[in-house]
Length: 494
Image (cartoon, rainbow, N blue to C red):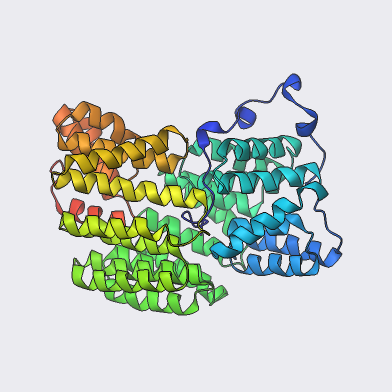
């Protein structure tokens, strides 16, 4: 398993300084970033609290993503002044109210910790609060201060991965961590994901073999192997690895939902729903439970049963609202919009999605902006398709303003996807291509890119993007709406 993307920090990859592409010169180093021997210290008045914090970091690296929260909560119970534990609760919790409280606790302790700890807290808090430049600068200064701390290299690289951005930057970090410890499990896991996202599956599987060998009694190596095999389209082998993970730990929820996702992508929606029900029952927190309910609802989309899908998503949205999970409520409505055949119905759900983001104050500025950008993207496309050019342009202008003020890649992708779709609708193919290529991993954009390349007479790129689209095996609503239909069509008729 790799860390869930939608509820964690997203980095502006373009702003990552060149600490991992070239060494900083001596005159670039300030006292704050002067390299320090060893690993980052942890400030705590309690040896027990420090041990609990360190156990939490180990559990985090092994993808026990709720157990590590429990470790950190226990740590701050022992020592309320353990700032890093508060910071990582803020980073990882699925409870938005807890995130806000923990982040403020960590910030309030900044004056009492070491320079390295201070930078880590500023990194986490800065990006969550939308202060990207300050947050990323703190991250880079922290890495420069502790250049031989493999755990920090992993944490930074893992954070970069969450945005599906520059794989080369991520790869360098994991390789640097592995140069310090060639059997470092967390780096092996994420390096395999980098290879898989580049569709270098032979390298991914070879790295996974190393990961399994290092941690033969842990569930996550098999869980990750199952996900990468699924990405490659090896569904039966994927199921085997998920079952191996569950044999090691029957409560490893990621593998239970992995089984369900794999059956869904295989086309067995009845079995997928049975597996999702098991995942929902054993979910470790409300946020995960809502996620699994949305995945189950998507099986009805795959069966082109819009009535049942509407019913399931509406139930999920209502449950999320009752739990105060307004980001998830918004996501449920946005997913409902994605498969609607009627533009008016889709626009109504998008209005409900945007409204959900105003229901509470605990959604972080980062999460709110990213979800809003996805909503505006679909609104622009649907309004344009419905012939309401004024509404389409208004949504696009809002997106452009958001994207121009940030290098957050989610905002950038949302803007370019919407702009490319509207230009394609006007058959301005060359202009559309320039935008759609900036959103080339989204199935909707890939579908439009195929048409645009065909219109532009570029058959090589057209066939390349069609192959990528048909080979997309990720359990998302976009994949469910676009890819099965694309696979049913003749090549070059997308």
